[in-house]
Image (tube, rainbow, N blue to C red):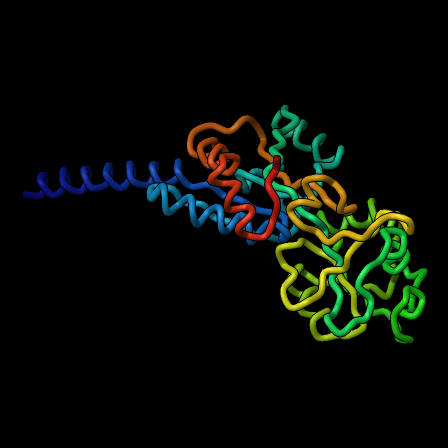
Length: 277
């Protein structure tokens, strides 16, 4: 009787081990860009509905956090709203002897958020940069009312922080710019403050006004839309990326292939972002 119980226990252990291995093989971890969290969670939700044996875990934290997790081996996919830096690629190479794999998966228009009560509705890229650098401090200097400009931006681990700094501010942010831990927090701050301005992904712009952006003083102003992102008339647009240590295989490859398929890119549009092509 005792021998029979041991055999049954052994069989159960084998079944549990097989089941555990199957789950492990089909679990994909995704970490990084807060800009991409809404989109990645939607991708994961739709994919898991169509592939019940798969588990996809999505967390944010910022592009830098996601890339660091990729380097230390704690995530399968790093989401980033900016390209990997040379130093990050070097760390990946030292640890895994690979330069990594970059997968552009969507496009985004970095939106400048204004309070709906703000009379200003359009700005040049130069004006936006000067505002966030602290060179322009009053709304009257850009056609608005006589009131101080209050700035809200992302923390330094954010890819959006870096992209906006490099391409718009082109220097240091003003010390008065309040850094917040996520794009939703910036939107909420601008929503409550008539004289505030912030920036972030287009998909988050609910309850605020999209500032139309001009390439320069002589150019027309454009809002971030599918058309203006595609034809590159909206001046502040970028690719969103997924990074992997090496070429994906198995379930990870199937998930990425699906993201890049018409079905996956349809989710991009439905979530408020823009197709990669």
